[in-house]
Length: 234
Image (tube, rainbow, N blue to C red; front, side, top):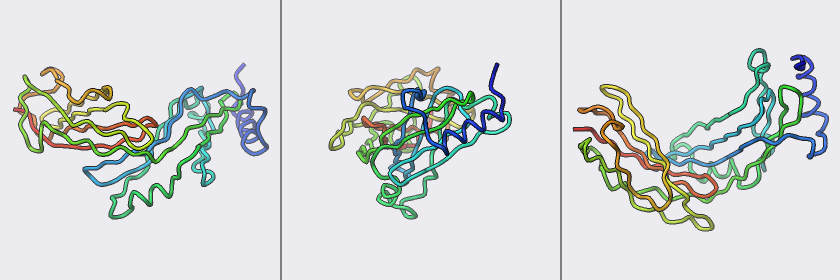
């Protein structure tokens, strides 16, 4: 029979406050990540955190600066449990907060996750944050304000050099058009790829304006840098 909500709450408090059972008895999160995203076009940056695992109702992340956040799921969400969890921080412009200030707030190192499943079992994980940051991709085509022929839609960029101590592992290309209908395409490609051709049926409708395309350079630890360009469709 499933543990009642009150018993789960007691177990969760015991796990977080009174200490943990041996590591071997804990269940590990399936996936964890912490990384920095820079928008080179807008001139801002923020921190992203992702985790995935068995349904849980309490979770805490601790880094080199101490506890960074704690989550307590209550009522219906607490009973059902959370599996995938993602957040991104606010991204003030570099005029308000420089990249150096962001890196000082989130130092390199190991960030540990500790929580409890809805059944009261300890749940743990870890992810490493680095400051190995990719340069901004240089977009070749289409350029800002260009009209794109949907029958010959090629989006291309220059390869990004490997950051010191790391390597570029791939790129993500995101294409969005807002008018007259909203469409969005997102695809991941390998580090050797520097262009994609988009079929007309995937690009959206003709005479679309308010379109933009982004290319994200992603380095080995997950840090990524975005460049954006606006275009329209003939």
